[in-house]
Image 1 (spheres, rainbow, N blue to C red):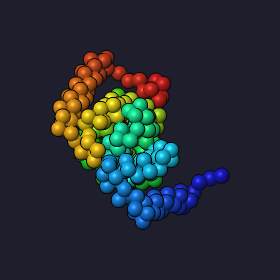
Image 2 (tube, rainbow, N blue to C red; image 1 turned 135 degrees about the vertical axis):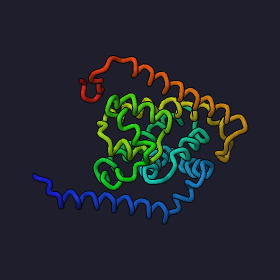
Image 3 (cartoon, rainbow, N blue to C red; image 1 turned 135 degrees about the horizontal axis):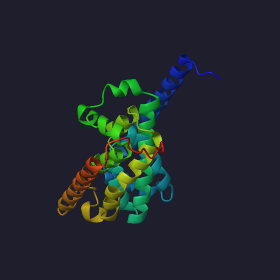
Image 4 (cartoon, helix red, strand yellow; image 1 turned 45 degrees about the vertical axis):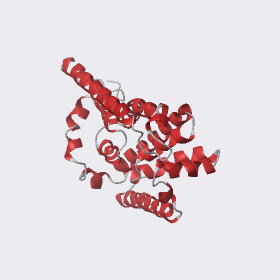
Length: 233
């Protein structure tokens, strides 16, 4: 069966329609109000008992790629669950949201989003060409999960699995830190504790150090074609 341009356009319009309807439904049922801050989200999830796990991942997956800050979810998680559970759910939700954002940019709105990628990310195009996997890891480690970064990877030439595994590795340090130290970094309302800033500063310094070491290592590698984990060459 051959896919015609018209049918492809229809599919894209359909996906956009589903996204808009989902966001409208979230607004109508007051979901955005519950996501106003981590404390409100935590209270809502606690009321759902075991269904809170599913609701957390579903809301994170569907809403974060289209405007809801991911930090609301990862801050709320350790306020509700033990750190191991919070880390697992935060990782699953973050990865699902990243895949949705990446796929939407690549297969649905590539041309529209490509024209709106800021210059501060476009400067990494050359790095993605040279070493896609390493660049994905570093950008996720430093910037985490903003919607514009999902879009940037989606409109780039980075392969799906290179993006997937690179994002997974890059997310581990910040999500682990927030999940493990969440109680010390945030109060019951999700606001920063007085002692949280040194921890965040430490994470920033560690991220910059890893980025600097990785860049220095890449520069020392012999010139030539660099192995891409997805292509196997």
